[in-house]
Every structure is written in C-alpha cells, then in structure tokens.
Length: 102
Image (cartoon, rainbow, N blue to C red; front, side, top):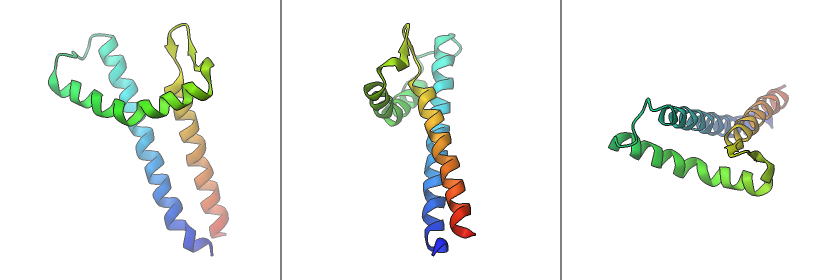
C-alpha cells in the first residue's frame, strides 16, 4: 500500500523543494537590489523579479493575513515563515514516506 503513495509523496516533495529554492532566490535578489548591487533599471532583473513576485507574493499575503505580527518595524518576516513552513512540510513528507515504505 505504501509503494502506491510513494511516487505522489516524491512529486510533492519535489514541488516543495522547487518552491523553497524560488523563495531563496527571491530573498537574495531583494537583498542585492537593496544594497545596490543589482540595478532595477536592468530589464532582465525587472522581469525576473516580476516573475518571482507573482510566484511568492500571494503566499506572503496569506501569511500576513493569518499572522499579522510577521511585519515588525517595517521588516516583513513572511518569507522566513514560509521557509520554515516549507522545511516542516519537506521533513513531514520524508518521515511519511519512510513510514509507508517500512
């Protein structure tokens, strides 16, 4: 029975891992823009940031809606909350797949 669910857990794990990497890339690009290492006038960086924001900001908005305390003194902690949540989901999927296969 566990072997039937294992491919589904693997695919969900891949999606979670990919989204984790997207969030990390967006955080790093925001820091690079903030510290003036990357210029926003570059059309490639603008398109990349637009794409990443379309992928991440709806989830950030949901986190801010559920936990209004994630914005503290103008600093938004929602990406870090999302990363912790993705790590938790990834670990849960791993434990669940190990449990189902044994």
